[in-house]
Length: 444
Image (cartoon, rainbow, N blue to C red; front, top):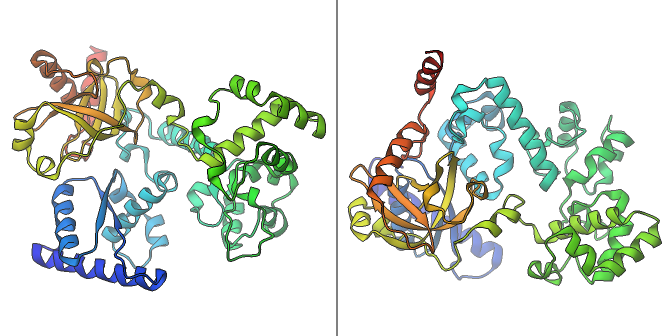
């Protein structure tokens, strides 16, 4: 923002008013709908939040501020790929776009970031860079296979992670946009034959556009493979689900395990298997793909949330007066039922963003019955703020355990915190020095 705070507020007021005028033109309503602002969680984010809230009050436009993990955004913003995508923009503007895109859909943005700049784990700077790149590539391929990509909007970096596609084919797909259906991949893309189409089709979604012809296949927006469309239509009819009305399927009533689904829908599964002469396993696979496509769950959290002993239900965000003042927060502890977001998971616990400038440490000894393996980056948790040290290190406990700060464990946690390589000030300090120390220790 501008060095002059008031000038910065006025700049934001003008921007919010311009967005309101755009909304009014698009919707025809003069009601001031809330504007969502994606704000990076780096150093100074709380000052920026206060600036945005001041501008919201002066403009009369309500604002929802969403904190976004900005790790690596500045690194990517100065690369050749970034300037190729945004040739006339400054690095700061490109980083801002990256943060906004992460809020909309994080996966296509995060695959662009070098693994060492993601701020995950403890020892990434001790590992071979090539190995790190390979691991990130395979992780991204698995993620794409799990959730798919939007064929008309995804970046070439994420499209390259689709099984069966080469970089040349990805470039041709992007040049051929907009795609009206999955069949366009086979019919319009030179070099994309029947075998490649069979391998990649299920992972590329073509979202339905009401402005286009109504003959567009709704199943193109799901994870169902084109060769199973007839099976999927029959299943949708039998289960009375509608792709156009997502409310026709209620996630809370869907059996979690394959065995439970097989038992509940035994008659339908047998009927479909007999009608189309396919195995019951394939029928179950199509049902699974329909459920995932209609309920859109975060695949990382499907099993993890069931293992969390507390959870974020009933918790509240940390009040702004406490998030902006470490002294007031220190005086208010222990503070129960605060919503936090996991930013990093390490051997001895997890670092959690609770809205303060520094992340809090949720030590393994403060997890209760929750296994550390159930925590994943980006997951929302309910936590208790147990203590704030004189150097602003925040000790957390899992919500619902009603723990009290333990001075001995807090001191031990501070030592682990210092050696973890995780910077509580939202950047991630280099670990090359500590890595060399460990190597010398091993040799000795």
